[in-house]
Image (cartoon, rainbow over all chains, first blue to last red; front, side, top):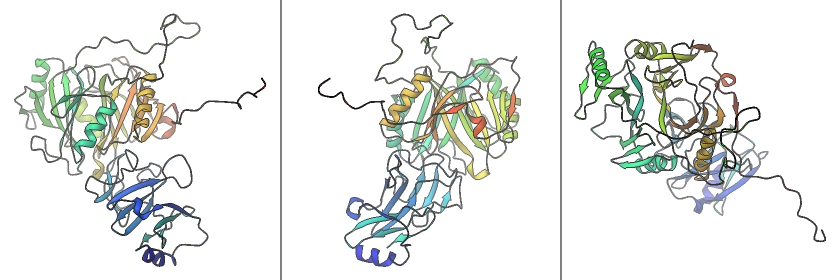
Length: 138
Length: 310
């Protein structure tokens, strides 16, 4: 599936962006999320959600205030059933696949997507220089 | 009306285990049946979202299902029941408390307060020109400490019409507005406390109605920062703070929570009586705090190690 991801995404990720490896696909349990600090800012700024063989990546910023990270504890990005992304500050719920807020203070707004690529060997890469680009992989 | 302040907040949540661990790590004591208490017996109750004993949820799905106020005595309780019965149902519950819904739709309870009188020292400081508070040879801070929340301080609601909320609490329950942010909402205290506020209303679109945060009082700013540091070290994520608010002067540190609202530590809030004239100021970052600090991992200024021949 890594091959599919890489081939699917390779055409849409701008080569000007710096791609940084976050982890390997096998490091992410299915139906789970994890935060990363690829720019070494001292706190997680990007998170990825795995649903089966799909990986979704977003900036860790709730659109409600625009500068608030989502989880109440590291990596706690999903509701207890893994069905939606949740911002713990005021309870906003977002669709995993689109980042669209479907309930809560910023209803109708979306999490900023981050271009993501799954390489042939299963490495997961994100583009960290483009805050509002977008993508899903595969 | 001699309402003292919030005794208990009751939540209906998705993830009871996480909420339970959160409140224990925050410093409340579990007393059974999903109830967690501060030192004075005020507290928070955690139930499953579909628990049939809970009042109906708001349409917005806010996890806060009921705010129970403590009042001075049975006469006050009777007076509140009589007042609210004029235009709404007032339920008499088996535990002697009463229950009604306010003009925004929030479920309220009233009971003769469970608050125990605390006899604890406040944080003390030494300063040039003043008598020393702490005394000679008394140490001000320890490396490790787990300060406990003392008392449920206040709750902040998102409301679609702050003027309607303010009118209900002022005219029907005798709350007093101590300060306000223009166009946002009032800070209010009930007549039975001198605390700057036990409730603050924030104007929002209707779909946001619910709880923004709740707060327990700590023994002083050092306890706020120590307790908050403990939360950071346990992996919880800061929302805002530490810092010191302008209106109320309370030190603050807010953390996100699995309740879908923020949870705050505060300390050293201003006290007021009826001589106070409410201020009204513009909302925004500049007026929300006197200063805002930021957590950083422990650090020390260090030079290189001494040379071997020194």
